[in-house]
Image (cartoon, rainbow over all chains, first blue to last red; front, side, top):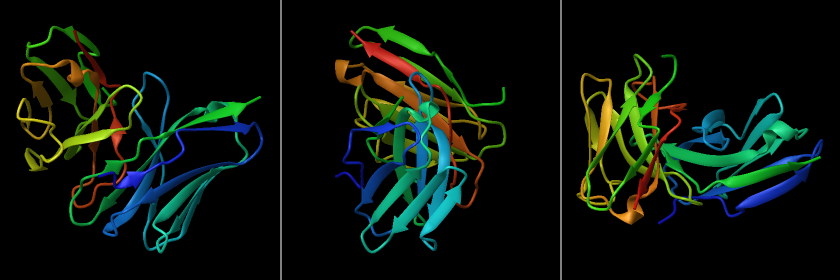
Length: 112
Length: 115
């Protein structure tokens, strides 16, 4: 039972354009969402998070949008840069416990 | 060290042998997590600790897997009688939050290959 779904295994975007990574969840108890970035042979690193009391959180080139009614969130990167090429994981947790569930990831390729 | 440290970084073992993977979290971090990433797959939750106790062990794949944490610090993940499907990168992460876990700080992982 996959509670956090990233349906696009990969995405290619031209440098300078906007990258949009999508994530869907099924557990209505989730109230805190995070995005992580992972380079090969390294552990994931935290990128940005959002609480369910908000619908948008912005940090520099990164913005996360949350649509609670649709159980959907997205990460926007603008403008996309070559160093953004990595695997992006969506993750979620609920206030019932501290278990953090990850999606399968989306590999982002930034094209020159 | 400043970050989460995992050892060994690489382990090749024969089917049926036991392996032990170690995680040194960031000093003072109360929460510690173990995840597994098989080739081409996402991060699979295994277990987490708050202090020395593990409130949720539901992610452990079988009774061949066990984990412990002592002194609120170092954790070991033990896999007994390894099988080829245990081959994966085992990632450890820690978090400073006591009441509500936020950002996780990951180690570089231990790559396990079972022949």
